Image (cartoon, rainbow, N blue to C red; front, top):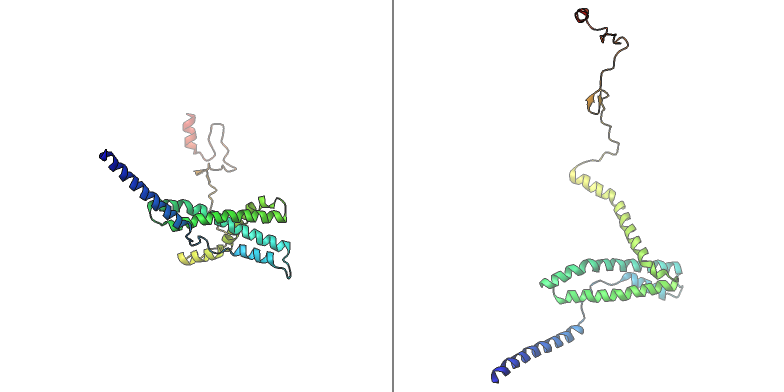
Length: 218
């Protein structure tokens, strides 16, 4: 009987200790304040400031522009979380990072969900149904701004490459390569017969020697 009670008591002590440790650890981590994953939200603060402005009140067009800018910032944060979350999860499983960074990311994800719902509600307060298209519009505006930034920095990038490779670009059109009229598809074209080189009835031209003609007739 004693041989059975010893392992049972051992299991009870081990699992009880693990349960108590996990309980206090979760309680400690739930009340702990983590460092925010993203910095402050200036676009949201600007929109709230304009919304609370009363002397004089901000126009609807200005509020709409500020709300679109706020949505653009939210889209960029969503893309950032989608890119960082798989990498951080893999690093967490390997033990390369601590739980603080991972919990900070999860907290930022939940906060972003609330932010998106708030932006949708504010958009619908201006125009009914605008909340369904404000984020696709913001995504297109971000893509257009990236393309414009690349186009604006093309001259600077070109100058940097010229300095790097010590090459001065030529703005004129390149000369066309010389073409040989005597070649057709890479082969020599047949010579064009002259006006006095008509073949005779016995396939002999005027330039054929007379001795050759007499030999052929014999």
